[in-house]
Length: 189
Image 1 (tube, rainbow, N blue to C red):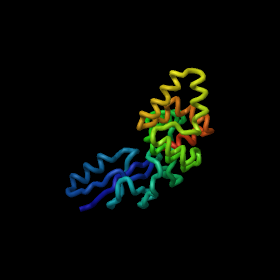
Image 2: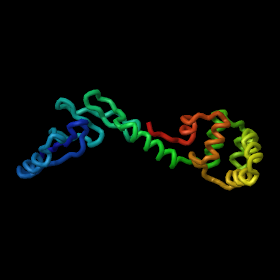
Image 3: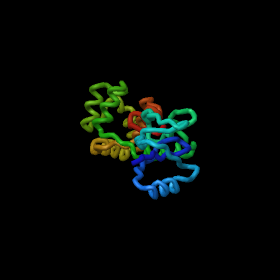
Image 4: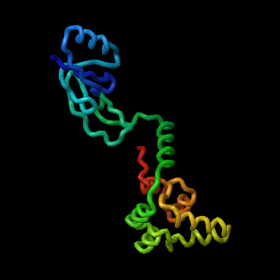
């Protein structure tokens, strides 16, 4: 029983395999893939892990990020999204990114943004001393809002990347936007 690997002619990536038992199945298989975007090669190649180039099968290297596309001519994974698609993906990833207060405190300590004692305070929901200037400024402007910030910090188990207070605190601590993305695990290429 012949086995065929069906592949995308643009990327060369094997998309499926088909075992053909009868002559009619062979004809049906050939008709089904008879278009410029798909082709076949005799053999059992692993879909998604193999690519075809010049009639030979090769193992794909690991794809580092899920949005990368295989470039057959260069034989590399590359990001083929438009700038608009990248910007939208970044905005969506930022909107979904969050850390527990414990995770954030550990991350800030590991990056030497917070001392160990401040990270311990922060992980407990207490206000770290490194952030006292932020709270003092806020309290001078609006004591009610300053109190709300402390209540939010103490009562929140999840800290969102896009929380306006987090972005202000990051600025006060001289944490860049790319670093803040990294702290919150934002990956979009």
